Length: 213
Image (cartoon, rainbow, N blue to C red):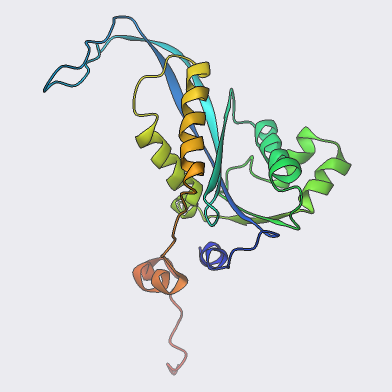
């Protein structure tokens, strides 16, 4: 935990951008009956019956200090899918960076081995040399600011029925462009010092060094 908190204290450095990465999913739902339009004093109403139309995965890449984010909609969230998101960061978004400081949870696909599954050993090694990994602890995924950004996306854009992946892509892209246009940043205030006080119960208890046997 303290490793992540110390990373968040670093000043902005365009040559070593801090990027948080996380993923979620969205079930697509087709209406089987037309919703009742909104009326004065009444919201739009939906029938409880619907048709499932698959589930899409959403990769959230978020640079909190610059206010940039990108959401990639995919069919799956396999090791190969994750590896291609890393390739985008290394070769497209941050191709001129010296090192990408990457914060993620400890999902089993979020590891160097996934790059070797997707690319040749030479390509995987080249990308790994440009990455600095920092993992949130078990049950501590809330420390990943990309998870917070996904929550905002869910509330502002995905809190309704979306029929198909094409519509999902359009809606997510519109949300992303608006957030990026305003360069909406995230100000992290929870520090290592706060953790040692508020989460004291999570720290190991050391024996009293002054206690005599």
